[in-house]
Each structure stands twice: as structure tokens, then as C-alpha cells.
Length: 290
Image (cartoon, rainbow, N blue to C red; front, top):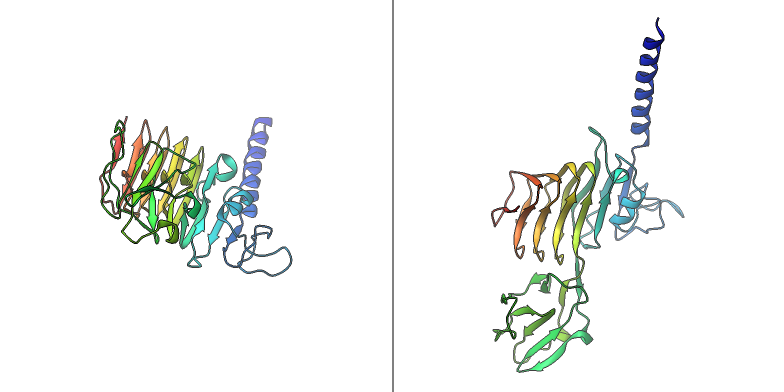
């Protein structure tokens, strides 16, 4: 046998060993915002000891995950109030062994309650507050969007709002209350977190059966350098800009997804981004911006 043949065989066995090691390392991580603690290992769906049990936040599971792992999220009926980020090789998978987030119908929310002290009274039932983060806005009451009045960017003053409506003007949210209504005593919330799931430079990723709602900007945003990313049975609703935004050189498959109530776009495609939309429900046609 020649030296070249021996080297080839050695390389084949080395590659097989590497693939075997990948399979051995793949793990399941559990998330539960009722029973979990971020100090737990995430290796079991229920607490079984001082350190073993589910983590409390999805992002903590992402931080613990290795390539090709599977994150299993419990739907406790209470939203996960957080923003998720997947970046680079560690948060990627392999062909046939994808990094997977299985939502089981759980919801990830970007909303936060408006502190009562943040409201200021302007007279004639007009109230206002200024969010810390600007750029896109969203006002909610009892978990649903409040009717909005669009304002041109060059408007010299906020419009005369109808009762129960709001607008964003010069970085401030204005709301016209009812005669006996005090917004400080009601459950108003606003889009606080910018993006529900941010994806950058990841490959072989699957996100399944998860809802993203009430984010200031996008439910899901694939920035750049993403490929073989699949959103399957995902709902993205009532976000401040788009349900899903795909930009740069990102490529995303959107299969069996639902989009509703997003402020500007259901699917926003920019630059060289690509979105393959299959068997999905959209209220607005995809927006393509070169």
C-alpha cells in the first residue's frame, strides 16, 4: 500500500471520528419559566437536585448550547419576556444535526409595562410618555395593540387624536384617554425589546412552534451570513416593524408560519437577503427593498 493511500485512509477515519464526536456531544437542554432557574444545568425537564433542572430563560439555554444541540421550551402559559440571539459557529448546527429550538407553542414577548410615573398629563385627556429606546413604537393595552394614528415625520405637532388612540411624535407616545380614564391605573405596555430572535452568521438552525410578539422592531431578524435557517410553524405577530426581516446575505426558509398585526411588514427582505415562504399565512405581501 502506498503512503498516499495510507494518508487517505487516515483522513477518512479521522473524519468519521469527528462526526462521531459531534453525535456524542449533541444534547437536549430544557427551559421552563415556572420551575426553572438559570443556575441549573438545563439537562432535565424538572429539578432533580441542587444543580440539575431546567433553566428559566431561553437565552440561558442558548448560552449553554453547543453545536447541534436541541433546546426544548416548556409552554407554561406565561410568556418568556426576553430577547434571543444566535451568533456564529457555536450557535449553529450541522447538516442533518441542526441546532434546534422547539417551542411547544410557547410565546416570547418584548413587551414591558409602562411605569405609572412615566405618564404625563398634557390637558384635554391627552397623556404622553417617552420610551427609553426609539426608532419604532408599539402601545398595548391588556396584551393587545391600541389603535394608532400615523403621523408624518415632518409634522409640526401631534394630531388631534380620537379617544382611545395613540401616535408617536418626536420620540414620544401620545394617548387620548376617555373622560374618566387614567392610563396610570390601567395595564398599558409598550414594545421594549428590539428584536425577538436575532440571527447572525449561523448555519443549520431550526426554530419550531414558537411565537414572537410585541417587539419594538422585528419578531425575527436574520442580519447577514445565515444559511440553512428554517422557521417552522412559527407565529410572529403585532411587532413594531416586521414579523420577519431578512437582510444582507441571509437565507431563511419560512414554512407553515403565521403573521398577523405587524405594524409595517409581515416579511421584510432587504439587500441580498432571501426568504423562501411556503404554506404560510400573511396579511401583507412580502416587502422587498434592494
